[in-house]
Image (cartoon, rainbow, N blue to C red; front, side, top):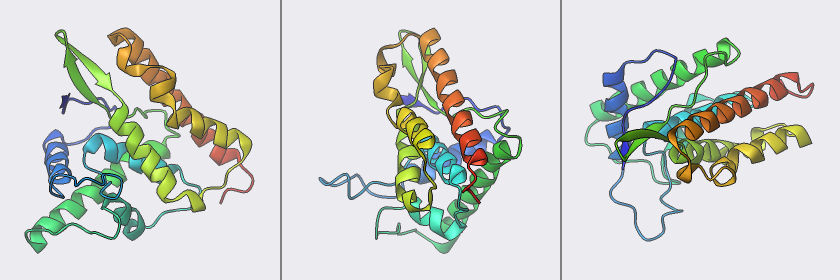
Length: 200
């Protein structure tokens, strides 16, 4: 069970964050048998990972395009009203702007926004949803990436991070250290992209 407790140095409105989280969770009915087909961004942590990948992409991704990647493939959500749709899109764009600010400072204040799960009275950071979001953001716009062996190696490290470090079975201290390592990988990827002469 994931709690909405999160960690992120960049300031954000917790009330709006929780509202966005709830809206994303209730975008669609319960998933059908074919979960892959129904895949979409359904949590704030997942959105943070998704937007991180979108903003790392060497080619700028337009709002219309990355918003499309939030929804299920070929199945935009059915909103109760135009006001609900406008509210969600406004919150999504605001979250995009918030994450983007970290890139303006060369990610010096970047930290993945992750949920915490309670275990034996401890709130343990959980990275699975963030990594799922990052993977979706990368794969959805993979054709817009300018890849080289170094960049591909770091992306592989990020996508396989959960399994490689066996994150689920780590202690609180070990998870925090691993989360720092994940942050370092994102910063490393950003530096490689910025130094790539083929990047725009």
